[in-house]
Length: 208
Image 1 (cartoon, rainbow, N blue to C red):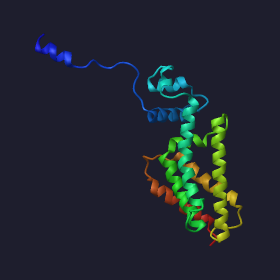
Image 2: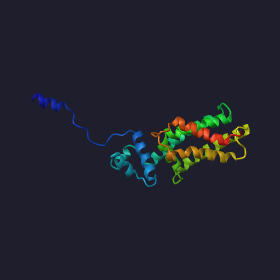
Image 3: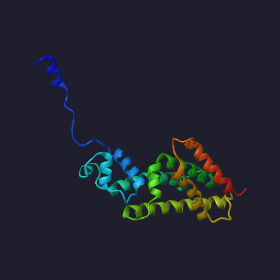
Image 4: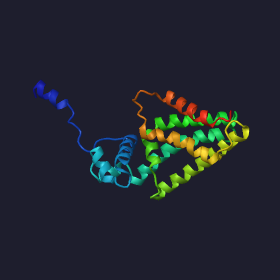
């Protein structure tokens, strides 16, 4: 064997088969498709095609489309739940008004950090068991936030002429609206955004 032939023989042959994807990559691509096409209109075959896989091969990565939806909604709800529990739980410190301001600003940052997953969450309508479970978790968060608003009203920091549950819905409706227009690569950074929303909202809510 010549030296040239021996060198060629030592070069490993290119690997063939399914492209390699980790669970995070599969989830990111699936969330993007769910947001672009709608969850109900997106099939497991669409996700496989997006990844360059066959429909049968996608099941080596995920058990079902519902599994991906559940993971996406858990991502969106997980940090929001942690932020709200920190502000409303028995170990929470500071005035209700200060805790409410912190949770609003933190919610903006969480939304931006997990923008695709939160966008998907906000479009859930309860068409499946997974979606219904997510909506139930959202209702629990809404109730905790309304109670925190009520506590801030009782402190005299927040105006009392508007019902606390309505204030809570308006406040976090403002936060959630960011998902429809904010672009992380745009001119407004997340810290400026969080501060601006908090300042604007509480300027109108203050009892002073």
